[in-house]
Every structure is written in structure tokens, then in C-alpha cells.
Length: 148
Image (cartoon, rainbow, N blue to C red; front, side, top):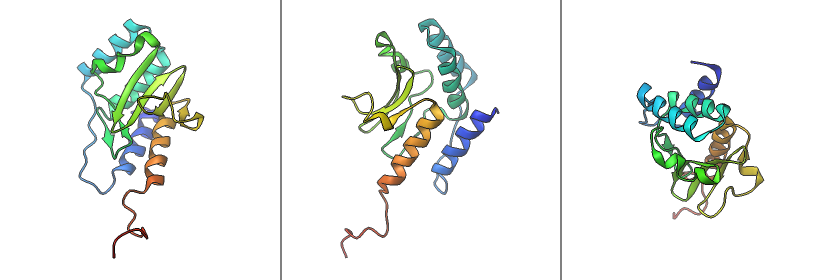
């Protein structure tokens, strides 16, 4: 496992810590399918490498309402390639994409919510998604709005 994969695994493992959640890698065949499709489309080799690093650690990873990646062999990833955009995932109303040299978190109508949601690397995107999950604090036990 390379250092980027170790970082991805560490981030995702901490995210799901204490929950019944298994992080599963893609199969060798799935990685080959993704890689061949990406090469055929002309995706930048650095972007392919970052995505392969993810898929070799966690394929079809999703958590909470914010972070969710398509399976590595899902054709949906390349659905918007005519616009030079990779549709990497969807979770509820959050869309993860790569476009214009950035990994972005947005929704169906925006590439990203703002420049703060555009990242130079996949790891930065994952960190941004985790930050968004933590800030949302869906399960805050000290929430003063709870019925008493």
C-alpha cells in the first residue's frame, strides 16, 4: 500500500470508527476496467492514479449524506466526460466530481458550493467531506433543540 492509499484508508477508517462498516477494495478486474475506460477517454494520468488509489482501498464507499463514490467500474463516472467532467459520486443531494483540474463537492445544479469546496487532490476532497460531516454534527447529543 502506497502512502496515498494509507492516508485514504486512515481517513475513511476514522470516519466510520465504531460503526459496523466494512471498507472494501475494488477487485483487480474492476480496477482494470476503470483504468482502461479512463485511458480511452484521455483522463489525465495523475487523476487516474488518485482514483485508483481510492478504489484499491475503498470501492463504492459512502457515508452519511455527504460522501459517496460510485463503484470503480460504474459507467456513470464517465457520463459527463463530453464536458470533461468525471461524476465520481452522489449521496443524497451532494455530488462529487472532477472538473477543470479540481475535485469538487456540490449539488446537481452547481459544480461546487463555492471555491472552498474545490480541491486540488482527492485526499483534500475526502478531508473536505469529513469536515462538512463533522460541522453538520447530525447526531449532536447536546443539541439544545431536542425535545425534553
